Length: 155
Image (cartoon, rainbow, N blue to C red; front, side):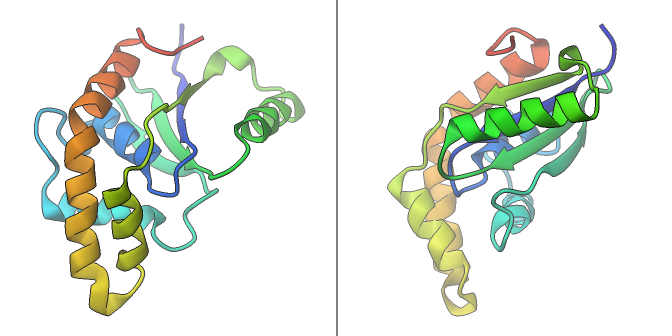
């Protein structure tokens, strides 16, 4: 099989899909919690108006292009839109893998995301978001590496 486009998808407002995709591409480390700067860069992708936008995260070791999409709401609608897009542009389904994240936001992530929107509260928001990520990170990293290897949640 040739080069794929891998789209990480989550239905959370926090960019969990972008976090998984960044682990997949090696943009952030899988074995340790991301540094403050790495996490801040990732958060800035999706803090203001990023929800619903497809974010390019680069390529993996196999030259597959990795993207992320976070949309809160109806999951089925996203699948229908992607299928329609493939059909309209005559892109073979085999070229795109949509990887659905089952990871959910915790209270720390929700609170952190909200506080990061306000400059004066951003440091506290960042601390809360980092705490929330710490709880999910091990499982999220294992899952992203399995996806990268082609063994998890791929049709």
